[in-house]
Length: 332
Image (tube, rainbow, N blue to C red; front, side):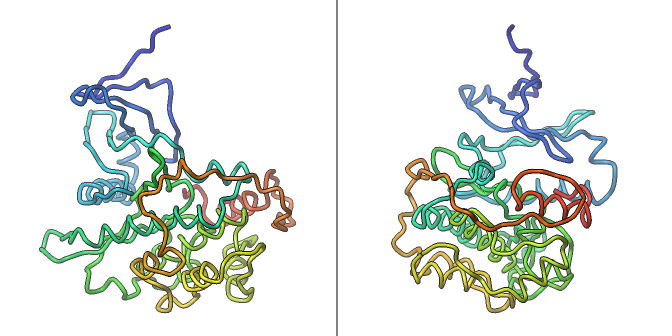
């Protein structure tokens, strides 16, 4: 049977084949008639969802405003936005290589070198943003804080990393970029900085923490810290030293220690991460398609919390679900 495409101006897509769905939106692969039917991605957001609350509406409008201003080799680019009476359609780059969540769920890990390639391309995305000299409506230069760096938001296209989903992003005056901001609870708990977990103010260096957690996870197949609740996770971070389950270089250990400093002001900047000796000899143009994740068959000693809430799968996923249920409801 021939697919029945839905057409939105010069774009069309098959509404029966979603790529994925979240709390607020469904994503599809679409095509652009004005560009030789090139593949794009479209996020379809029901108008009713946008109008459920002012906070949700502002969240989506922020994503659009942010995406309009940013670009880079390692950033998912906004292409167009369309509205109909029933939906909002956000068209962006299509990424053909999936995301980091897939190998993590498959219990795959990356070699140290390959993980460094991924991290350097993530760092390049944010260093590139800093070079854009983005300004707000008052002409004041602003800096971008992502606030939701996690495996599902690290995509791949033609072998290169693309940072996605700036829906939680915050634009702050450049002069204040290292000044900690009032706490807003957004993001995924297991990747949150200690400041956010403990309801403290935070700076753009919370993104450095989240990226350090992700960097650790793709090398070792486990998280450096877990917990059966947000307070428990925070206490483990404060009281348990950072350990390395297998051998990695002294340079990479140093990089992780400096990205995962508990004190916000002691963490590296994105420029520091990009220029760190562990990443110095990494070719920024190397494609991740040249990188082959290997199955992690070792015992990571990542245990499921002992409780009766139910759930299956790895200890990590179980812990995440438990934290979500107990503290965050349907936050994604």
